[in-house]
Image (cartoon, rainbow, N blue to C red; front, side, top):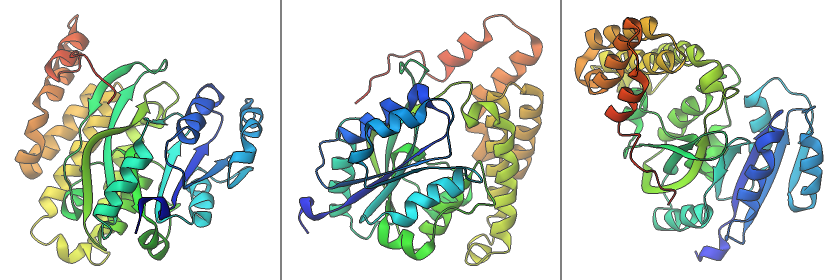
Length: 316
């Protein structure tokens, strides 16, 4: 298969994000990859997004702006129409970096049996300035079961496997992507490419900021789902303590980011009790939570220094 024969589908999902939407659209339309199918699904925005969408409408393979029941339904509308050998979605506050699609397509040619190919993501602020590098490992199914999280903006799915497995489960609203990765990873290997392919924007309206505590709730629901759903029930034998620790760790991360250090510490301690080796590497976040409770000045700067975020960040 030659590179130019590989169709890549990208679904842009949007709802009332006019401040960022055009930048997201342009980051997709200006990719240097010629065989790109772009689908845009808007949830009936009322903030001026429709005018932006119509500006680029002729360049979309399909688009719609109508009310839906939430992000999962909206993204699924696009995934159901995607014809690509590789399929991805991009939320309207994130962007692709130049060359991202070409790199994903080339990687898939090299590893055509991969069910997921994913790169790395740089976190940026409202203005698009780099904040910190979001690290991802070369993870497989068992790692996903322990709630090692992929950075969704840089994930490209095997289209054939996606169409067999189905789209997002509408019962999930916060870890809906992770639950889909779990279902896809049952079918084969995932491939991590250690390159920045996308940016993920952190702002007050983002779900991972505005509704931080809800992510942990869904982690526990997914853990319970795995216990009763084959083949996870078998794969989890002898590992459920690690799964439990991973769910507590994820809950603690989001609680801390959501400004709830006391609850975050409680979740961390539960994770340590379940399986300490999975949780203790986040000692710096636990220290930040303790200092937050103590009300010490300058703790934010200390925390950032400890995790290395004050080093100059580059978009590569």
